[in-house]
Amino acid sequence: MPKYAVVEEAARHCWSKNFMDVFKDFFDEHADTFIDAPQKLGGEQNLEYYSLYQKYLKLYESVLSDYVESLDVSVNEFYRELSDVMEDPDIKDKKLLHFVNYLVACTDYESFYKIMGRAAKKARKVEARADAKGGGGGGGGPIGLNSAADSKHGDDGAE
Image 1: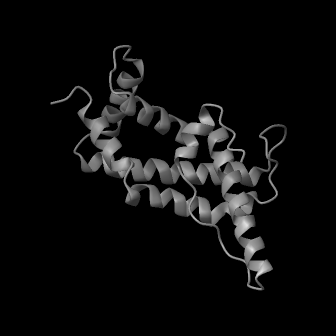
Image 2 (image 1 turned 120 degrees about the horizontal axis):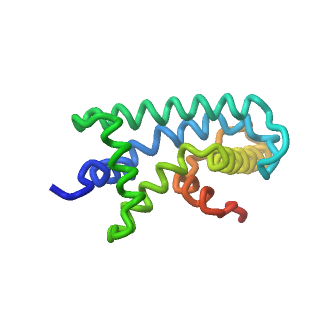
């Protein structure tokens, strides 16, 4: 059995479309909350943003825990293995390390804020196009979750 078998299996599952769709749907559904949010995080924050972040964390933890438990592994054991991957100076599997960093970034408020800002920006563009064509508003399409890892490592997502 590979050294990090549980994390490797979780990585395969978590990169799948079905797993990611839950979070993309959440971002799309709540993008309008961030329409008027400042682009940069700082100063006083609207409490609604943090409340939404707490809701997202519960969803994230629930979905991830349900999956991990379906592997007949405890959540504590899974997080222990994640920690081992992060602390392994000899790890050769850079994709696995990226996955672990990604999971950590997914729980970071600053990363969440940036993803929601991108979702709001996309929703505004979709709405502007619909208005220009004489249609109504509309929600934006899915937002890439890989943005969480990029946000954690300094990519501000500017286009």
